[in-house]
Amino acid sequence: MQVRECSEQDALSLWAAIPEFAESADSAKQKCAERLPGRKPVFLAAFDGNAPAGFAIAYERDNDNSLYVWMTGVLPGYRRKGALTALMNHVEEYARKQGHAKLKIRTRNERREMLSFLVAEGYDVLSVEARANTKDSRINLEKTF
Image (spheres, rainbow, N blue to C red):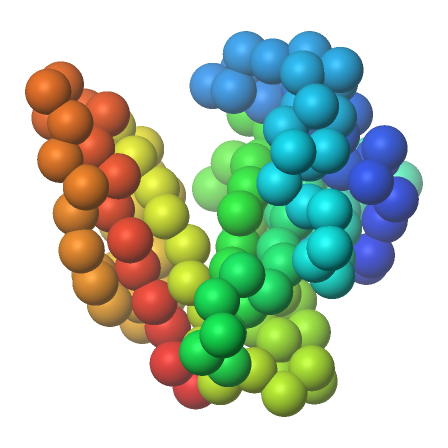
């Protein structure tokens, strides 16, 4: 897998293709328009040859020398084939080059594969934002390097 920076539109197209997100590219674009103004986002895409496999969007959110990984997803056909590992390694490398000392990410309790991946990759659980339906609870994680 190769990872490279991509356009916002390329990342949004991949976002819209992730079944768990169930959103159109227009809906994803609206979320970016609400969240990203005034921030310095980086849009990344993973490729298997010329075929897109996944994406990540990260930006500076907190004033604590961290980079926040806001959205990431891998197309079903590329799961368990190294796309997420390649994306997250690239995000970490990017963060280091930008002078950050840690990555932050949030996932839902129902995303067990993502949660397992993050813990295995050295992320620490910082907090849990409980919801009435525990599967919807958010888990905040951080990796310091």
